[in-house]
Length: 153
Image (cartoon, rainbow, N blue to C red):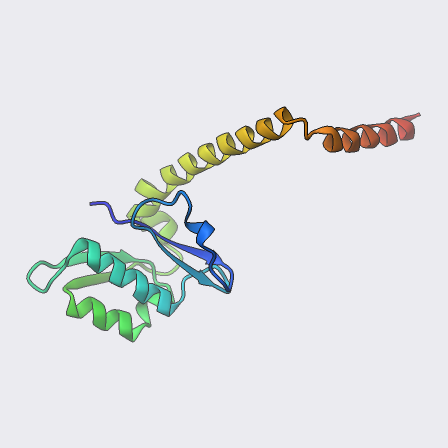
């Protein structure tokens, strides 16, 4: 089952251009630290409920890490119980080994993301260089090379 992601940006104010190119159905949020908060976890849980459609007659198991925004969040715990979500928290400092999504989903996703980011970056650099905007970069490189070359003598 596909559940669109929640993207959390480290910033105070959200800008609509942050939505560009995101998967359909993605929800967006900001936090000062860039990490999830209790309020953002509740927002994500409502998003999860909207897509998964759990109920007391059709329970869903949600495996989480032991982050306080998950396990010490009364609003989230109540929301989960009311909607037939059974939660399991993995022991602290073990999620990198035990959490199924880290191994089966996020690791390959990270690899694919890095490949796509590299490809995008190369395309941007090629576009900039193609548009004859490399002179300033070339000048800095040549000056640096000149300084290094003079020091070697």
